[in-house]
Image (cartoon, rainbow, N blue to C red; front, side, top):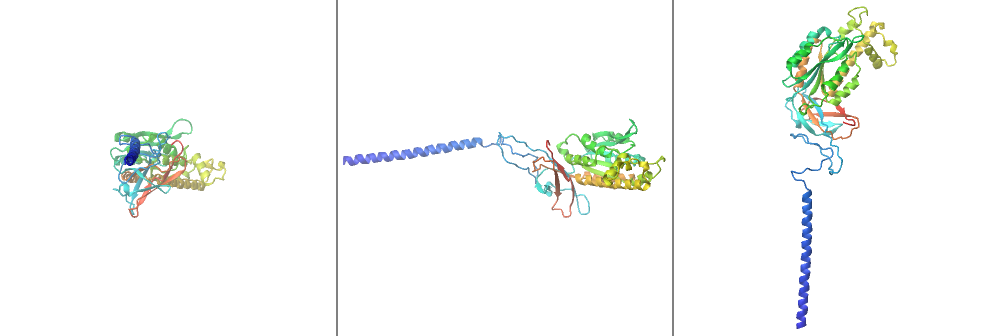
Amino acid sequence: MEKVERVGGEALIHEVKSKSYVALLALLSLLVSFAACLLVAAQTPTPAQQRPRLAGSVSPPEMAGASAPTGEEVSENDVVRVDTQLITVPVVVRDQEGRPVTGLTASAFQLYEDDLPQRVATFATSDAPFEVALLLDTSGSTRAGIALIRSAAYAFIESLRPGDRVAVLSFNTTEEGRPKLATVGVQSYLTDDREALRRAVQNIGASNGTPYYDALERVVKDIFRDPPQPELRGRRALVTLTDGVDSASVSSFASVRARFLQAGLLAYFVQVDTEDYVEDRLLADCQDDRTLRLSRAQLERYRRTFVPRAERADYADFCRLGPFERMAISRSLYQLARQEMDQLARDTGGRTFQATDLYAARAAFAEVAAEIGRQYSLGYYSSNKSHDGRFRQIRVEVPRLSGAQVSAREGYKRTQGE
């Protein structure tokens, strides 16, 4: 009996010890789990902590119907190049009858780059201010109507809204060297001082030549050399009164077009028809005081563009050309100028307006001012982060507006270092 009780007691003690061991293991497991939870919680960001940056991520202003693109998360030790270049896209929407459509919101637009959908990051309507470089062509083909040009320019400036800023450029003739050279003159840099702008327009004079491409390049490199303020992104434009026929530039149309597309500037052209006036004077005898001559630069451009196999000497002397040759060259150069103006306007999201003469220029300027006042400005951060120098095509659609006609920036290039 005593032996049985001793054995039973030992079994009970062994059972108690086993249960205590199991409980201890359970307690240790619970403590390990609790420590792991504390470690995870310490690494989880709180509202006051900074989350690791996203490669290619941005933080544009919040807006209805728009969100920022996202990227892959990286650790704090990784080297990250955050792409923050905002691509601005000026847009004008017209209905089936060609009338501007106002009152649209950001959600009405669909934006594509190389056929890939992009997310709209910024959006502005016509309430935002505008900056305009006003270029007035006062070369030989228009010099007789300088008073009309001034009048049209005055009316355009007055039709803009308070807060819109304007710069005034024109062509001048330098007295240095022989022959006299046409240059680009800045009569006023960007200002909203209407009286100062009137004085600038009053100062324009006639020029002995048309450095048209040089003037467009100066608009990009000088007038708009500084990056725009956030509220002005996509709201900068060239507005020019010209026939578009260059006679004295160092720059080329191709280089100017590339600069405009890269800068995101709109181009509006009031095309003045001076062809008959010029042609009549080109056909006059070289000894006649009223004769207009094609410059060597124009003759060489015609040769390279239209008859590249011809000898340069055949187009070196204007006075040796017959009347039919002069007429053919002039008409070809005018046709080329119209094509270039149409292309630059289309590519940048601008527009061309026809003016049969300088009297009609005033009404054309009024149309330009009205269009600028109805323009939308979209901005996005491209999902393509490469800097390969390729041209990227932009397309904007307004799918819920039947028959909508959308004029927008055609595209841009991004190269290394940008």
